[in-house]
Length: 360
Image 1: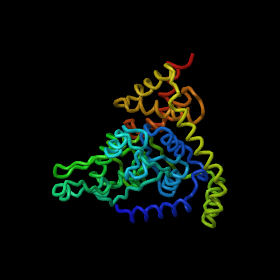
Image 2: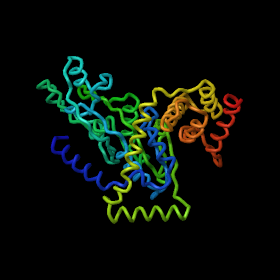
Image 3: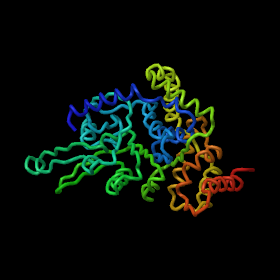
């Protein structure tokens, strides 16, 4: 992508931000909002998959998230947005400059929701490498792709269940390694690719590959709201937004700002949040009782519970935190048989673990 294209994208992003529906104005959908916030506090939770029928504000909520995410500080002249003080998360060029003692130029910019379109090519996703110039002139001409834009941002895939398998494989590799590696004819380029993966899908339009489903830390099932008063409130807010987006956005500016401050504070508290041994055992027991394969469920449940405790300004993880996030972490990891209610299974497993390890 050249400079003019970047400038066009920046202008488009600026325009989008002035017409974007505020995150704080979303009615209900608390599980979805909580899942996104927990990932914003601790990206190691592993991303969010949102499942639900059309018209349930899935995409609106995801896109609205960007405005409540804290700004990030980046190396100003780096196409990958490397963090200026974390050499282990830098691209090779920034690492070399950092280790040589160079003072890296910095700037602060808002986080973005970067779209991965279903019709994207593999080159658009990973970037392209001019092999001929590399071989003949010894210059590695690399045009960064979507994974470069997504580094330290949110990577959003709408209808992720319809994504081509070859793109899914690339995503899985990048998510697992935290970097993107492009190799052509013996020439190799690598750069960091740490992103918060968010996907939305309508289950009626197809399932998701188990390998990709397992990669999502949290899965949220959303549905239309049946409460009449809440539905009226949804349509009223939408009408007010459509009538004058700027006035509507101004009404929620304080709530948006407060939410951002809560996320920043939670990030700062997170390293000090502890997990007592009885709760650790309960987390393990819940996964054992549910026969969850591997240990990804244990690790994600612990990370999500710590993030929730930090968000609630509580220094110690309790079984209540675990109980609140367990359905988001574990429901999609269970083998579901016909007519089985996996959410009920998770609740039962939590209650059993509480009796075994937490309750006196």
